[in-house]
Length: 163
Image (cartoon, rainbow, N blue to C red; front, side, top):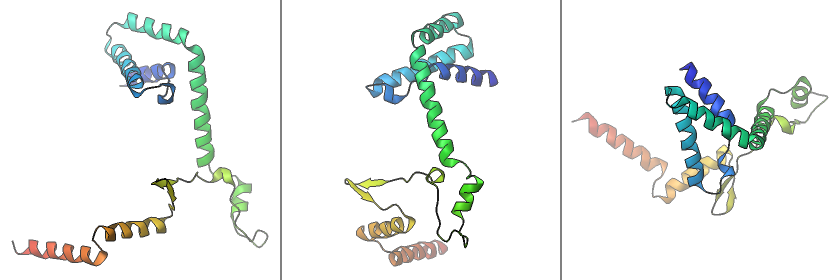
């Protein structure tokens, strides 16, 4: 199992292209299938010399792209870590309300990025209250309301008692 993970990690560090690097989804899927075939062959000991030669040739031909993709991935990881990191003492002090700091000021780096939802090209408020209201409106548009749902649930529960 550990050998499999080491091989997978090594191959993925070389074959590190993303879907954005391909013009069509079929090409990307073919690439992923080729990578999995290489990993399978190395894990199972099938044509190891030919497979290692293929990996070495790919690495030599694409070393610029490999380095660029590794740098992109490292940058994405760094950005994700910045968004999810624990605030420093200065930032925590700025985020707390004190007599010296009567307003809450939150540094932008420590805030998660907002997720925007779109429906028919229009942005929807994604606050919990707005989502709950939207859910109620959707149920009512479908001919349901909370009272009808409760009555149907009670009727189903009591009907099952007398069987």
